[in-house]
Image (tube, rainbow, N blue to C red):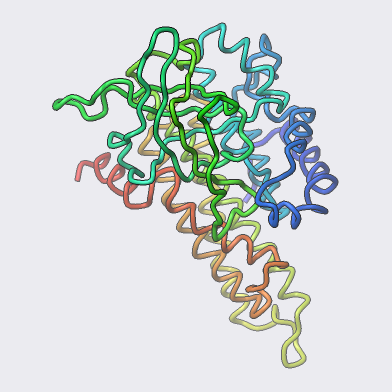
Length: 383
């Protein structure tokens, strides 16, 4: 089915990203997985390529492009090559929307230029050891003391937390009220070099092994008042504003992963022989790949429609929930079937299908679990 989402500029950008991956990522990607993250200077290379500044307004050194389509291209090309850009996704797709919408003019001038260059990598810290989806239950506190806040607490599952230079930390600046458990939360943009700030364990994950995920702790960390993002106490409402784009980003990468799995399996079964015949010649292989290709086409159509809606300012949280739920379930089924077609080799990590399989499991958890998304969708259809 002919795809109409991208124009010539997007396809030229695709070629640039594809060449960059081939030259700078693919040859060393196994080393990144063993290390648990790319080398720090890789992010400066991404900065030189211009990908961090695509959606940043021109007055701060960016390209001023508002469309999500360029981020979709990067997701597709990374999946196609079976690689990732480490903490890139959190830096651009999660943190940047907060800075663009809620940072003051002074903060934007201070933070966006190094954000674009890769000199200042970022992460966002919400989850705590005892608090996952229930953000209102977080225990990390930030108490005002003159011209700074005193931050105490701990966070976990923080993607990009090992190499980050600034972390958006969600903390309780005042107690919750009986009427509103979500009141009193604020976002502080914390300098990771601050005294009392420490990175704990780099967590060993099943998949996404080239993306650092860490535990963080704060012991009497002094955060200047000028590093408060937006208004004090408005943090929870800020956290919900970007959920649609965040979930669409996960849906996009999940669809791209499923599409890549089909292509990896297609090539493999055409080369592998069993009983004197290629695996592709068996009817079961043809039927499995036909099923997978059909699911991928459906996921692609949904993602494309949602990207257009996002660019038009019309993507609702429920729409994004539908996209993420559907695409992550498609990813699970398709990647599993394509791994099966690889036989024993599908279980070996040197084959990209194995990495796709391990990476796919978390997409039904982060950015809102499938169970949470079903609740949102059910509420939207009034049941």
